[in-house]
Length: 217
Ligand SMILES: [Mg+2]
Image (spheres, rainbow, N blue to C red):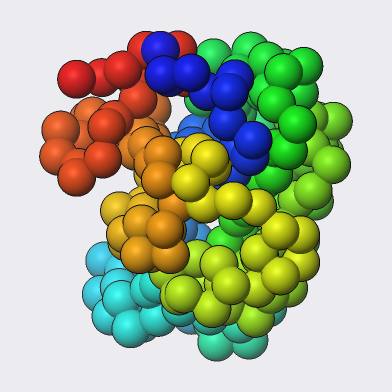
């Protein structure tokens, strides 16, 4: 159980791998898109993967990495069209909706903060109805910086002030949690199993959650 989360003034929640199963995103980028790319370029899947992996790696942690328009242009593939093709894999993580309902009932200021692109957020909202739990849903593109960068947090705070000391933040990305820690956000939690079909991770500097009501450690 998250300690005293009801007493926090602000709860910040990541989307992919935290509220929603990262399986959808991993499946799309690691399996589905390489197949689409292989067909488009008339090469085999192994060659497609060998070509794509270094390009993915070069952009990880940047706004480009999270930008569907960038990837559509870079790869010559309509990313949103293909994301919609496999949208049946978009799903909540265990207990996420119960947790969101509790936040909505008991926490003054709950915000979704995602590095995901607004077009992807729109697709995920259409499938899950996630938006009914939030007054604010912030995409890092709209702040011009990814959560990995300090300027993201500065801009988030200047949009709508919050007190880092009484803020709780859950994210499955260690670099993002480090960035939030550096900014001064006090109550930080990681996620033990962001993707339901890959093994749980056992290492994080931050307490890990199994689901929102159970600690993994
Ligand atoms: Mg995430």
